[in-house]
Length: 413
Image (cartoon, rainbow, N blue to C red; front, side, top):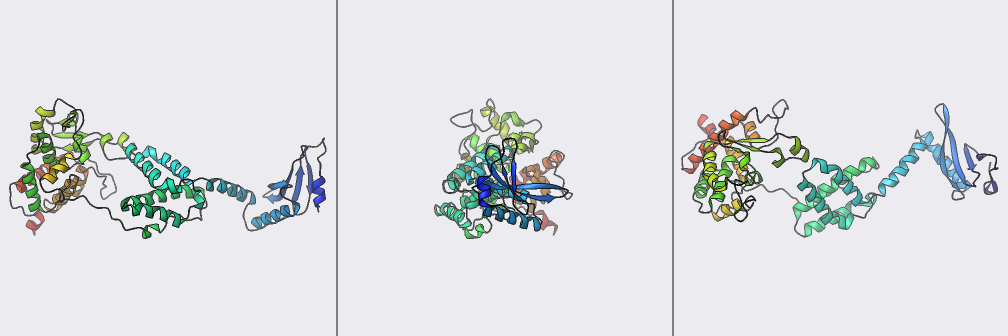
């Protein structure tokens, strides 16, 4: 058994690589020729001996070294490898030292490749505005649920209920990313916080789905007295029911009026960055009514890039507020949004015309699957979609002219 004096006076002879002073139970003090002294505990692992470092003398005295040995022996008796346990503790200490901002930026960098540039910028901007000022310098392991809740409630207090909901979603993903590297028994601190926030339910875009009222809207649209460019976009919006951004940025190079198709490049679709780069182009069939509207517009903008060019700058597409303003000027702005034409078409194509929902979803550029789980092939069913969109355009003409249209399902009954 060693004494404190033995440890204090121990010197390694110059002709030896090290000196080992044995205590009891596998504990020993190793002294180097340079004078450093370190504690180790030796134990049996499998068919060979191994050891674990317990610290340096005199920072760790004899009594403390014996306590560390006993603690390691208890771990060993309980089935835990003390060497691995020490490595894990050291790793967790390093990880838990990471600040919320460091982990959040690391998580963000891992997502960028699969996100669109705009989404990546919006996400980073929200973290910098709503989370980093209060949580950025806090160690991840120290952030408390109520602390995060207070930050989210600050966002709510400025009237941004939806933004608070998104901030919670970001925090949840950041903690999900961090936790696998930390303690697997530690819970995500965002659990349950949603119940403490003001309930938020995303608002749908206003959309008219009642045929008679939609016919009134169409008559008002055809009577629109604004410029030809805005009027053409306004009239095409319900016929083609594509996303406003895609319609607004329609290019003449994407049009084949002879084949009656509009091919939207994958890079312009609402997709992830990877899907934009590797996905198929979205082909939109053009009914005869759409082709006629585009031919009428061609002499005006056909010499430029954009079908709906801006009034002041013909090298840029028209403002995203153009069609919205036109709808308000007609008195329908609160009932029907530009994006809402997609919902109007989706509803009436099924309820009034009883057409194939899968083909409708394909024309909407939604990712859908058939009964066997296979992704719907938009190109393969292009002929069906041509027929469907022509039926839709003809139906809109009948609504506009005030025809009494009875849903096919009601007719069949």
